[in-house]
Image (cartoon, rainbow, N blue to C red):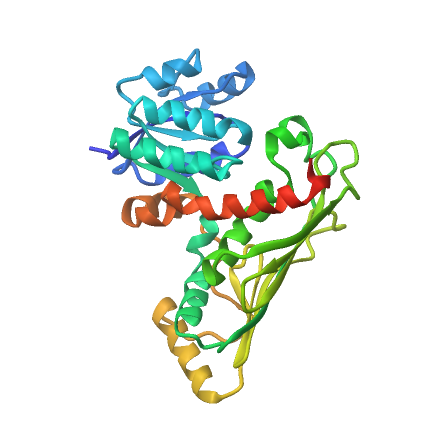
Length: 338
């Protein structure tokens, strides 16, 4: 029997990715039913998936005794309230990012999951990029020596109509960092720890018809070194760059690609460290790679659902607390983000 018998809240744009994941592992996930308040969405999926239950209200989902797991794919500002209701109904949860805009609410959800003896997961799929596994090994083995600085750059393009509907309101989407930057701030934090936020500022250069800024800058203090962040959706006519660069006394590492899924460059002062780096790559990937080689695109949701079964701690809801706290601190210093 499947471990998780799943109902989904929200049949919008991201639903198809979760559907593919649920269908990929029928031995672990049984898809029971779907709720969306929009009749047009339900009609669409009813014609394609007639075997599902289609609930007439959100409360029916929480009350369904056949369901033991609820996947939450609704607008971001609803995640916390719906996750709390699901946990209090003794259902496990899989929640699209962000779980909440408030790190204290993440701790509350973690406590509820423990109280009701259910599981709670958050979707932060960039964590399972092979490039991230290699970067973690580089940091653990201190191949870069003493860290001297870090820079995160995300210069992406999104069409003018992207920030419309619920995404066009700061109160609904949480801003550009909760909507986009959270994945890469999460990786930065996993590799380097939690910084203090010294300064932050945002600008409305493109999406001027909304209250959501399109570009945010921040300055970090990691204790013995500093860092910078630039997250922007104002690039034209296409994405320009996504990169995380870590500089050390013995070399540097630059991650890039579509989702930090590439090691763009990794260089060292001495050959011995380079040899150790190549050994790490071989152990993680099973093959040796050179710089500027893609080592695996960001795993999509089927891989994430697989990892929830086999490596559940990686996506445990408690492990999203720190990045939500960091984004909240940046937004708190950035008076223009509200």
